[in-house]
Length: 122
Image (cartoon, rainbow, N blue to C red; front, side):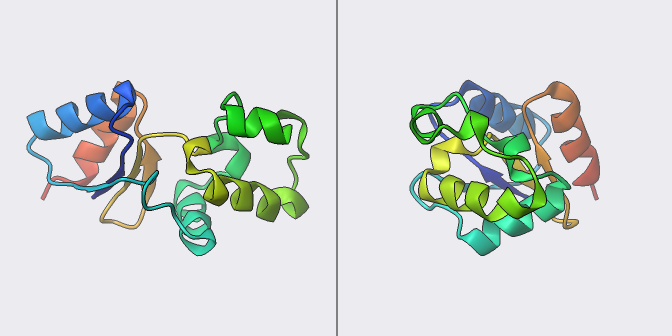
């Protein structure tokens, strides 16, 4: 499993702690320093089964400056959202867990973390 991690994020710290306690191996990706490409983020969204605006932190200064809260949320707007999130990766909700089975989860809740653990047990 790969965990998109922001070391300053309490939800990321909680996810790391939970996975460590469950002895589930994972790789950290410092996505702020190693931003995803358009292709990678598009794949993550496919794996999540979500459009970009559902994992965008629209309250972040970079989103507010762009006026993203008012951007259209339709299929034709997807590339615009993805490009903004790649340019400013702090806009991406965290932590994102890319599971080895090809799926993905946003690991912000205990339920999502339990699901990640369940799916990554041998």
